[in-house]
Length: 458
Image 1 (cartoon, one colour):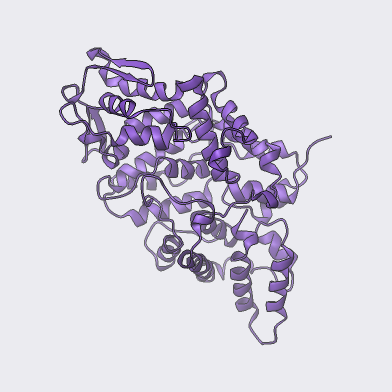
Image 2 (tube, helix red, strand yellow):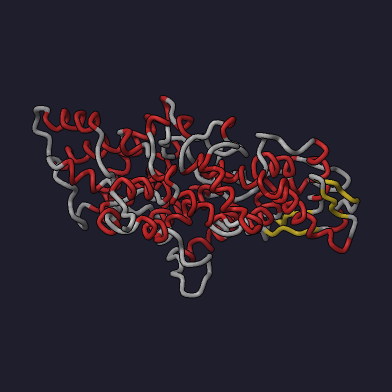
């Protein structure tokens, strides 16, 4: 008998991995094999594959690669791509990698460098982590952000090497690398410069340390003819540690933290989902991110969230903005209109500005998203989304569901059901005396339902 998808499955799967479900998603997939629903989220091959639908905004992206300082324009472009993409899991993974390889706009790197990096993350989003790790070591925005361009044989800078081990590949629980490994890795990475006009990275042999380096038990360097590719040997050394178990476990842990549930650090080595995702990533030395993500989304421990075990996640501000825009059918134009700027700014106030992560460690997770200020920002975000809806769509699309029909609203907002407490609170509001106009009451219902734990937490 086929394992069929329920509304709970669809709400959780799309809510965590595809910027939220809509009523149409529920209609399309409820009662279909769950494995088929998961498969539908994976794009048909990597970026650029023949026969794959191209992104409609590709011309805009190419224009942004020449942009210097208007980060708001890039932020609005990416929010709209998240809303409209035919490949939502790929875009959601691009956001994950943007946080994992957190690189921020500082003038240098400029906006164009970050948009180019964004496309590199997208290209490898569900592909080879081996290829992605190597690409990030020579990425112009990363080289500028983590002082790689200041790293040369006469002045070794350890910043990129340290973060590559600590934040990007191996983690710190347990810490398997030493300070000597970091110093030697930094020597491996000497020699790169970035032309800020062309936004291209170049390896300059005269700046490279050609000595023999010893990193994580491996010997790298000593051959001037191969100096330009030593950074790839460094990436390989990190991935190969303990037969790939260290890096794959760290990546699996990060994926489960992002899409599944909070794993205490002292349980990383014993959590069954982390173990299975790690194995899928490193199987046959493929370092296949897509295989790991597929394993995670199909896994019973991921699929059947247990609230008592705290296996629910607070969604990020960007996820909520995009989901709200999808539900309402509003656009987020790249041009700086009053509404698009306000929608983008609302995500900032809630704690997440695209292309401007707070530090190299990225954004918070779970309850770290919530404070008095950011919670108010989330509430304000819903009000701004509704304002954009009324401004853009009131004459072109059907009105929202009748406020008397909470089941219709639940479907419209992409949820499987409402909790008893949320239902009671909404009924109290709807049953209160007054003569509020239906559209105004609908606005309040959207904001109240959107601010509820049912929609904020998946």
